[in-house]
Image (cartoon, rainbow, N blue to C red):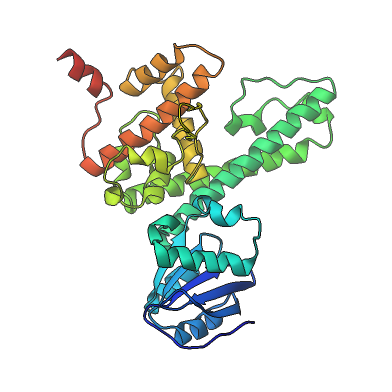
Length: 354
């Protein structure tokens, strides 16, 4: 531990490099000098001691497992807390001399110089976090069920059997087992798939109840055919507030559905999407795009937009069209939520013909 002096100041800036058990803190004074370097436990007691030593200070930390409860705790004790977006801190993550103390000092200096460089993250409330946890748990069960089904198909294929492809995932465990049961290892897995399916359906009922009881704004989003309670609720919990964005077009970039850019002079290569933001929300939007572009999708501006892009041809035309539809779907959902409008599937097309 290296200490210079231990004086609190209203202009004190503290960078905290979070760790699972221990975190590293670097304190900067009014002139940007290092006042103290401290290694503390990642606990409320250690944070309380740090808070007492430097009251009403500005603190910066990277988003992570502990950032949510730590930022709420420190904010409640009168500190100005900035939770930095880790994806934007290449100056730290790609440094040639990276260590915990330097990371903490860099966070403090960025917060002291210009806090907008940290691209602050807004943590959702405890209640919203618990509701989102239900969606996350459901996604985990769906992933496990998919892995089990793929394992059974591969095991049957290796034994000279081929299971039918037309069986729905939700009823996979109820299919004709006469041929499958010849494999002794399969029956317990089919029973487990059945139990997972029952648990997933229970989560679906709870999500439907949440939409009706606590998040009535999801009804506005569910006007779009292809957006069910799961997608609508996850969208509301991810965005949190309709007035969070000045323009609905900003939502696509926030969810990582806009192309990356690496322009230099006359060179402007076409790159993939950034994949920033909530990965689960991005996957759900892609599922909605698949439905809109699929055989059950109705005629709409979203579908026509995707068909237009897909008709251009090329190796990845269909994939790019689906991403574009997912991005446009997010924009339309936010607009409906913010404006409280009735959804018109052919709004743009009707305006052009009128």
